[in-house]
Image 1: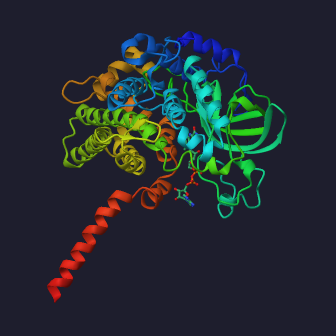
Image 2 (image 1 turned 30 degrees about the vertical axis):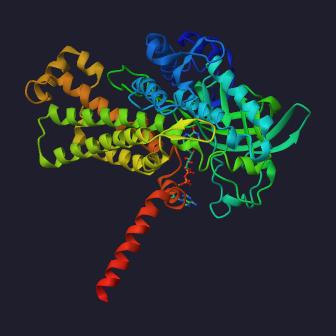
Image 3 (image 1 turned 45 degrees about the vertical axis):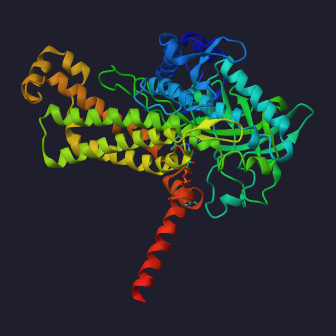
Length: 491
Ligand SMILES: Cc1cc2nc3c(=O)[nH]c(=O)nc-3n(C[C@H](O)[C@H](O)[C@H](O)COP(=O)(O)OP(=O)(O)OC[C@H]3O[C@@H](n4cnc5c(N)ncnc54)[C@H](O)[C@@H]3O)c2cc1C
């Protein structure tokens, strides 16, 4: 099937029931629910975008020739990375980078997995069958244009024993039974962003398991959202039913996050990629092409969001003619984040890496630092908005107030901007800024940036323990040389 249109996607969403709770309510229809309809439309827009820009966003399926999303490209050259980058940037612009999990995120991930036979088939081909299932899934993902969520983290129950599953072995996702054609799984997973708007959910390793973990915890598979026994508990909605002027982001772009419970869910074996094979489970994500591959998508999204943030923060200052040093310094700070992220990606592609199976990714050396820096930078961006925007973000009249003739005249007199900026123009900027960083939508967005690829703590830990090779090698050489020189000076 060729790339879907927005209408085709919404039709599919209507036809896929799911056990999904929002607040105290089991949701009947995602498409019609007032708190979810905006998000469904945003994903429909994602599908339509491909048809509006076919040259940039579509490519022929390598087997059928039908047009499919370019986010499924399996890059084998830097040209491929540039081509994919242009498509991913266009997609990020849909929500100005505030939706992290539009379907291209999973498409890029699975293009990378499908290219990585080396790790997924395992030592001596011990997981050949699982790898073939994975390749068949990636084929279906791209041909059926599936909207895919994923949930790869076992929940925190007791930090002292979580890593070994200690006294709560039923919580982490695991296999409890098996038939000739399927496995039966139980457990919890945190979180599944996009769950209301997805057709299927992918399960794969988030963190390695300790050596003595029983094999039934080593699982990877896909599951349809309507599978019996699969339950999603959504967080409180960040959506608002309001005029878009009042809440430009929250009226449409809340992608939702849900806690996921598997209560004896049956998974057909054809959909299973790892079944009780810890050696494979522990190898596919760590020191693998996955990081660098997905970091192209996430860094491009971050660059888009940082550039948007920089211009919006500068607009807040312009509207009230704020040229103070304090503000200008902070605007400069956001600008440096945007350009540093761009520079990291340029360097990573200029020195792209070819992996064992011929797949090409940005160089992980320049991508790993982004994993620990970007979360901290986005927290600073929120902070800067609150410094620069302050109470002005709250003193921003709504559409209804501006539409009232008497109130609008008073707003123009008593709440205009500087240098002829009208009350309405000023309100538009500060309302947008508040929704970007301060509303429920905005604060969830900051939490997302902090955690969506694991916590900053974990990423810095990995930078030192796993990915410091080239930095350490040159650093050690410099330290040794200087020690030797200073020793000689003392002789
Ligand atoms: C909005 C949002 C959306 C998300 N979407 C998805 C999704 O779609 N799919 C998915 O799979 N995941 C998703 N995640 C990520 C996932 O759910 C976790 O949030 C993430 O892995 C971090 O885990 P945690 O929140 O439990 O924090 P933790 O890992 O518990 O870290 C919290 C803090 O605990 C401290 N800490 C204590 N001990 C340790 C230790 N041993 N190692 C590291 N830190 C330690 C650190 O200071 C750290 O900052 C999402 C997260 C958020 C916030």
